Length: 136
Image (cartoon, rainbow, N blue to C red; front, side, top):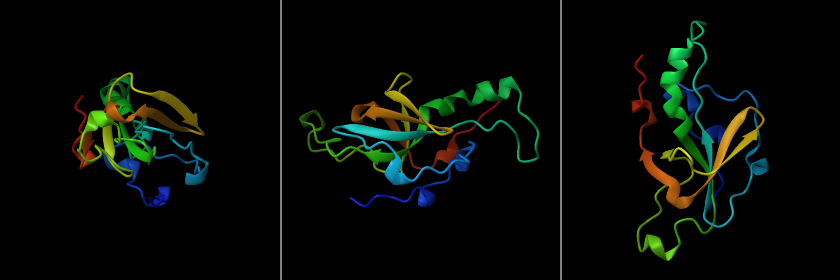
């Protein structure tokens, strides 16, 4: 399996989230073992492109982003358990996914938030994460 360059993965700003200013090389990110999956979690923007700082109401409305993230690495045993039968993997590196509220272990690396989740904690794959909207 080829390891993606994080610079070529989808831009987090596609779904109204702030991108990290701190670059962490792919090789230095934690390596999921077994059936674990490493996800970089989306973060709400705190100000508009014009420089307007968002109110707490707007930030609260973007709370759904804490359950949306980008699959960065997948453990070698993910989706190979007999409980998955002959189905193909639910997600792969580079996919945007929705996970459960309490899924996985949160990891802070620099100013970025990741979650290490089990393979069966993926609730949905978002083919186009830009469909997620916030209404206040």
